[in-house]
Image (cartoon, rainbow, N blue to C red; front, side, top):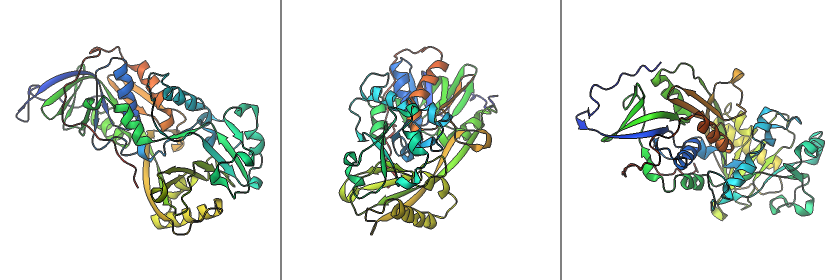
Length: 399
């Protein structure tokens, strides 16, 4: 299965004398999965290093909108399903982390919004009105009286719901997870030029240091396919589901964190909105069905479509003078029949290799639980790592 030949000399590579460091775990990829596992496994006593070619969160994680949600946006057909129920408990799990009551302590992490809303023109909800009021959803969604509406819905004529969801500051989250562990991160690409399989694990060369690795954990997102192919692991296959997100700089200065489900016919919100910044720096980040279908449109057509959707769905705000841009995100996932969205976080262990796909930011705690169940006990328990100058910085949002 592993078809990479070991180097001819363990101590002398490319003319450089190599210092060898033994580690339990090497993580490839510095998105939410990699950073979460770095913090979790370090706390559990594993000697862990993380390799990231660019910046922490630079691909899918920073494009995730920062939503911690319980899956109701996947139940807009009026029926609870695998996607909606697999993550129903995630907001409560994250709030436990925020309170310092979990293995991952996120006390002090700033929230961009401590609640999330869902809204629709009243005439378009139909049977969803009864579904949202059902006992099955008690505690997950509450209909608000107009006098309870947040100020951003002033002038709206419809229905507003409060969800048990919230929005985290993603760069701050990543920085929190690696705080105190910066010396465990290496800005280094891992590929066939510096990765070799051995009889009892792997070796990764970085600068003058060669890491002897017991277990290799891939959290490389879209780079996972190349890593899998490099190692010749035929049992694992991946898929890509692209999105074309839209970023809006409105002049009205109003923040909103909400799903628009006006007239939905698909099992997905028409618009999913999160807001960042204040005043002149305010940005709306818009996804949902608009982003899913947007890959079929040119950038110019996607921007024009987003402009029309915002005017139609949120007509009480002034959209004159707003600036728009768009970008594509390729969501890397385990292969599913029909290329559909996975319901759960994915972890697969083959010999000394573990492949991870969180599939959603909100499922990071579940991914961590799964990985812990797959790993052998820590061998280098609580052993320290040498300091170095190749640490990885946290990425920034695309706008």
